Length: 148
Image 1 (cartoon, rainbow, N blue to C red):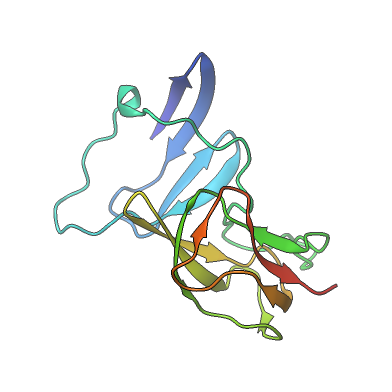
Image 2 (image 1 turned 180 degrees about the horizontal axis):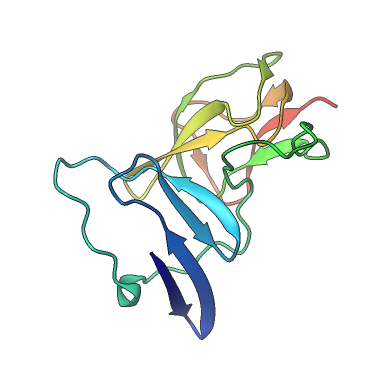
């Protein structure tokens, strides 16, 4: 479903995919995200534009896309993975020296009782892991760094 959402006099074009799918595909102003809502066993509620109350982040560090760009290189210039929102690291699934592929799970970040899977925004080798399970992180804080 497509809708126009206005928050603090800013208007956003939002498209929400199948609410029964997991993850739910969402596009905000052309940036695609995969959303994993909490499973409660109840059917997904209807989405109402007026129910949106929090401001969208100015820039999400790495929107999850269904496939890497056609050139196969991913975001080669990106050297870090940052926290898209403040929260607590629940688990880290990679360590320094690990080779990762585009879209691979790197860690789980809990924010507002939602578990957010942080994925690799490029293929490469992890140079440094800057967080551990239990760490409180701020928006845009570096979680991991890639080697060149």
